[in-house]
Image: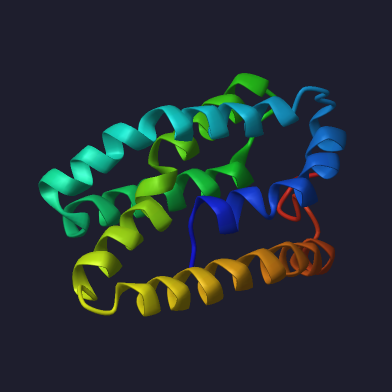
Length: 152
């Protein structure tokens, strides 16, 4: 399952040193902090929107913006503000593309056996992401090389 935690939280540490070395930035970890703070501040509003309009209307636009923001990290330029703005955007839509929105769908779908659904979803999907995404990111990073499209 792709989302804020699996694609940003669990893989961010893999990219800190290479991005810092590429752009000579020292305050790259602040981007993670900005994303996390933005996610925390926007989550109550996002929860209200999910309750009001339903997850089917919230998840697709959030997932689209989230995917575009993650993909845009490949197009970073040496301006640190661009990285910070992208991290804030990831924080704004992160929970709409993650467990906050999905857990609403699961809890309404499995009314009578909510405990089983919650254990299955939370116990397997979220834990597997934590166990695998960092390793996969390291492998892909080593295989593809950062900034492989960079012109020399």
